[in-house]
Length: 253
Ligand code: ADP
Image 1 (cartoon, protein in one colour):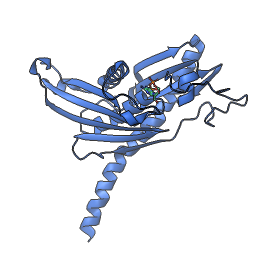
Image 2 (cartoon, helix red, strand yellow):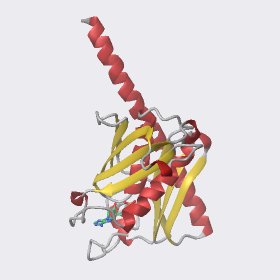
Image 3 (spheres, rainbow, N blue to C red):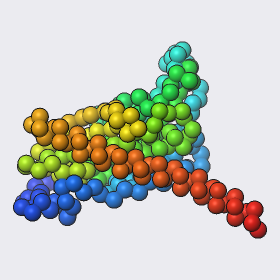
Image 4 (tube, helix red, strand yellow):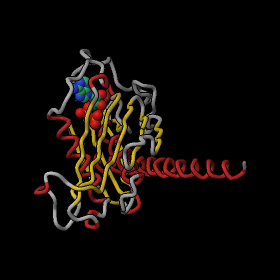
């Protein structure tokens, strides 16, 4: 979608299926997740996904101000997606814009079905998604990190929300859309899901797909979400293993 590379590349994919960044059509970019890295938040996570670098921080459940926004029967989930001025190739004007307002809403809607908000009436849970470096797919990477940060904050949840994109370049469906594919490709689809329940929490699409391609693209994204889900769980396990190791180290001396 971005309009920041002036000339389209000669081709986005080779006859043998090699993409412009060297990946195969069904290949994801490397993903690394770290949990609990911000001391001052109730929960936090950092994700590296391709060239994306994103921090997610969670506060709450906590008192909601102004009070009239509070709901008597459940917590209010608030999300703020923000891109740092240095996160893009051309400096982005600081502060909210139409896109960041839309993505804040998209991320909130992707996460909401996973949470037991009725357990905390009258409160708010605040989620901050800070994009430090962007490389296409920040909404799915941000959603993935935010869900881990919510788990790290101990917010009761049905399960983790995992997310991924699939695009179309000509007749080929490509997993985890890269920057040039996002800009010059023919379609892209973002999917978030609760892997434990096989339940899609958000589906967005730009461009066009045939019904057959749509079905295939959703299948590819859901399979990728299962892999992301494993990485999310592993990252949470790592945090606690580290604590256990530290305690064990302390008691053995
Ligand atoms: P997503 O990041 O979820 O793919 P978009 O499709 O809107 O969302 O954006 C694709 C990519 O375009 C972003 O990841 C980012 O690298 C780039 N981009 C978006 N907005 C801007 C902007 N205002 N300035 C420069 N680059 C931008």
